[in-house]
Image (cartoon, rainbow, N blue to C red; front, side):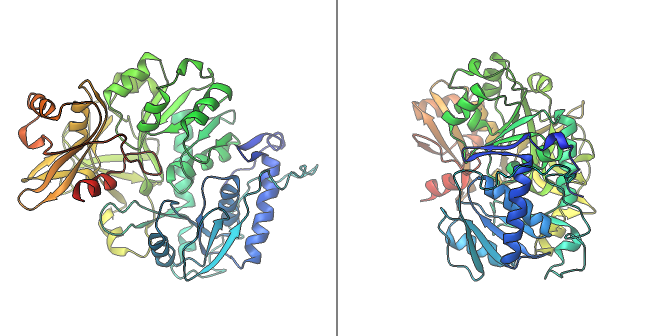
Length: 498
């Protein structure tokens, strides 16, 4: 079973709070039953891959769970994709249909398309029937999820696949990570333990549901009977207001979001907030120092789609002792730092981060070659670079996709960005590599702030080797962000190359 049975007392407890209304667990159960019947009318059955295109919305949550109850496999689509990109993912994944919110434009795709209305209030406020013993989200493996009742073209139900999530595709076409129900549950259980979660928790979700960081929040919370406040997107005014007025206990943010929230008076936040899960990008020392000034309970974390979200997470106390570390692996997960020959690196030596555990994906959809390259003997080779210190804590140096190789030298953008943030006048910064016929790549830097570039270049030579000094510069009013609030380095590269 995917979610454990909950007590009768849980039924009238808020499960989902949104700008469109609030669902108790009982109301959510009723809505999901209605959605499941609708999906069956559309012909969706066990093993089908179903694409979903929508912004964060309660109906989106309901649809995902209803699909799981049918044994179908959600394919959440990034709402920022172009029509061609959506068409590629839908067709490559062999989706039987595309379901979209009625406020979303839908490109031409060669599958059935169904729309769902975004009602202003929960449409099924039916009281929970007395004597009913079902869990509001009970999903047993065996009936609808049983193997063999309906054969998928890729037998994904044999793997127990719970969703397909396409990676960002920083090099080449994006790849569809197949995350099983076991993967999602294992990561949620490990997260419960590391974050000391209980049914009393209330998680504010601003990350998109098509991102593993957003989807995993619901798995964690609904397994426990906790509450989720779901926002359509990150809006600093709305999130700040919620933190000041609601009994929020946990929130997931990326550094850019936290920077923006710190521009407000965080002392007005309710004292219920006990943990800020900070991931998606490196947290620089300046940000962590500001958080320490306000004694904010920040827990740095490292994760990735292919490992079902969190891999390592530091406790708030450890975060302030080691601001750039992401702590130890969660229970049931092990990591190694390996060299180019897959040998384990000595303590303190930078290498590739490899992950092993029940959270590691089943593989890439319809891509045996990439799967074999990424997962070897059950170990996930992430492509990310880092090292482990004497205490066993992980330090992530750079996502490999961001690594710059110039004149044969490896350059880590995070190192340059950290140095630049120390200079007055630099409000924000991002470093990327752009192609160069002589050097292979050269270092380019985009800044937000008021700075004198020649003076800055000269000052950098006191801190960085010459090959690390940016050769191309841009001063921008803001840095481009992607849908999860991280700096969109692909857009920056295009800006420099254009």
